[in-house]
Amino acid sequence: MNVMAELDRSDLLGRAYELGDLINSSAEMADYLYWKEQMSGDSAADAAIKAFQRKKDLFEECMRFGHFHPSYHKALDEAEVARQELDAVESIRSFKQAEAHLDDLLHTVAELIARSVSESVKVPRDGDDAGGGCSSGGCSSGGSCSGNCG
Image: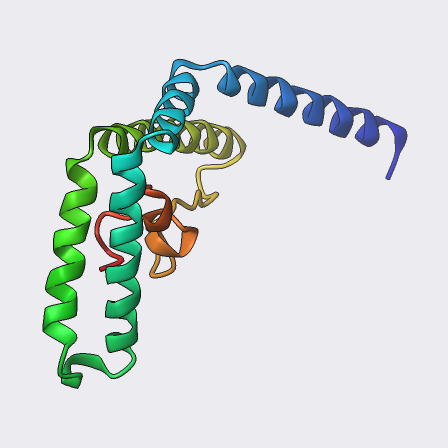
């Protein structure tokens, strides 16, 4: 690699850190951090998350055997009710909304960067493939899984 390419790379990385600092000081990040703190100190949120996790674990156990497991539909229904109870807790609901807004900001920035390089560059987004959603741990933290965990 020549010296000029190295200078361009270090300048690029420096600007990426500046962009990260701007995102960290954004209203979306402030809202996300506020609701994350509110949720972590909320005993109702903690109880709802733990209840959901238990129902989710039970359903996943039934999923190993599929629709033919005798408790499959009951476990599915209970997981769905627990997910609805998560969404009924204000701190969880507001955290999930703030998380979605921050995700939208990050995706918009990534897409703008990618498009400035080339129109053909793909920009992945969580949930675009089968591995999205719950695999990120969103449900266990009250995060956004859109109920796909149940």
